[in-house]
Length: 400
Image 1: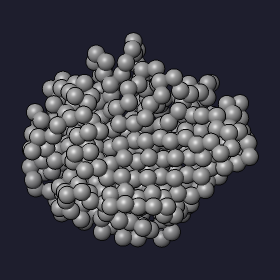
Image 2 (image 1 turned 180 degrees about the vertical axis):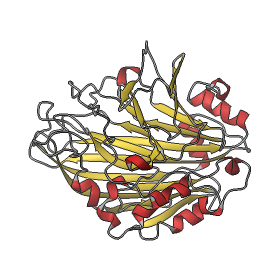
Image 3 (image 1 turned 30 degrees about the vertical axis):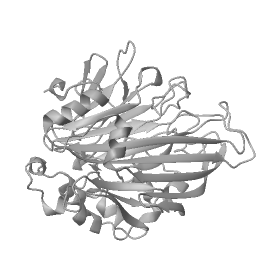
């Protein structure tokens, strides 16, 4: 039976399609439609609690600290530049949207895993785990964070959360999340690259700290959790995800449907076509993962890089459907959506996701996880040089 993917919890409004499935070649040719600009899309976020802009020269991010430190979008060309990132405009504009935060998208949002299995956080205890019963933990849906600190290019918010898994174990945790916009020099330092004057860039880091504030140690036999970071982005027909791998890698983890028509294997590399034309998801486990992945969209001349913390020897929770081992999970996932009115699906985006390893935290112990998202636009040769340094592959080597 084909089921709705577990990371989607509501039906997306069909109005959003026209706002995200734009004629992408216009972006690279300089003819950006006004409705696709950062300025116009920022106006649609007016109802979001605490929405604000962090800026470093022409690099911008739209972020809400109260919405659990969510970055909705970024720009590498000021307010008139393209809004990079997908969020559901009809959702964030709805009445009481902050009570349904979990499924509204965004270029960087926080979740916790696992989704499925006997230690799942997205099912009530004792219910059958299927698409009809999946639900977001209430604290991820409606718990607004409070401000804990800020600087010129950084905000920190947090809250106490309570999460209960499908085995009945309750996690009490204090969450602190910091969003930091990088300067151009910090982007170069983070990726060990030198950007030419022809290249525009934007980059930011999301760092999440959790503390076990309960009176019980988190144990493997009662379930562990992961800090899960998701970046929701706009695809195109020519968009390829680039995922470096290591070791003797014989294939990705498949979710929902076969990925054979989307995956191409290269030496030390996985290429994945992310075009939002068919529901699919893949993953890479820790023994084969590197701490970076990316994507290149030639239609928009946009190079994306995601860098994240990685513990190759760590325990990673498993969110694959009907799995048998709760701790044989993936570090990274790539989700590919689709628009299908007959099935009630309006998911015109793809996601680059990473998660932390899972620790047995005693009361008072803490864990930290960080993911950074970078975008670059400019001369293709210059972008290819960045890809070669960071991802280990020239853009000339992408599949046709």
